[in-house]
Image (cartoon, rainbow, N blue to C red):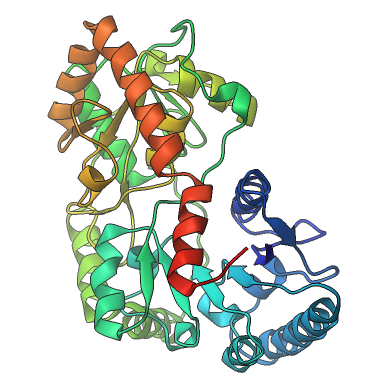
Length: 387
């Protein structure tokens, strides 16, 4: 079986945040599944995220999708492509090209991981796809209302075979790894106030960062009004209400003790610390225009798959649908409040036997039920795509 993959591939570095980490997961997952993954040479998929809607984006779409169609026609003459698997933002999609690919017999499936954070409704550009891979449980009603075919499947994650066992030693204290934002600062600060024995690693956590303000130029009233109109158009009037609420009643995250803050880590250290922490902590809330910071949006993130696959003893923030991934209390633990996070960390610290049991059962569940192989099998079955 051959899959054509569009996953923000680029031969150059772009000033875009974390755009290139999905590709190796998809490539390794397909390889392990015995699926040949085909990429279009010379196409810079990430470049399409650089441009606002307008002439530059239109030019990128024209040359990119022309290259896609030309490549596919050549490939089809040599060896069939059975599926086009994409990770595309709406503005990258050329609906006519998707329709043409499906006309010649290649079903197109789009994966998108931030539906509930980015959209109020499914974008019209997504309508031509044969199937939508939707990882967020909370986004399913959005696709139901749109009447679009979709499959609810976990975030795509792949870990090397040598990491598919639980660690022999626990060398790190309970740890959260991730960059700082105001909702994470507030949650962790309150958990530490409640007694949580917790270490934080990542960018932006150093003392005082949340009090600094970048120098701002004086903006014209027309610019300010224009920004608010743009926000309302994209996210609705509720987004303006949330923004006003956050300005009038800003969160005041409690300060963290210096000893709770550790240096940023490399990818290899991230993996080791996640595996070897007494408890690996996940946070699912995010700052977004869709909700206020005091009642933040939360949905299951990639770490809910990755940490258990790595053999972590995993404590994560509860979200709707999490019980469809794991058995809470046996495979992973969950918290709903900062105080409960603190309590659960203490409870797990005192019970090494339970931690070991959780590591083994969660890893077994994640590797068997939540692998890319399993999801691709479901997609192929749904679309009647054979090998």
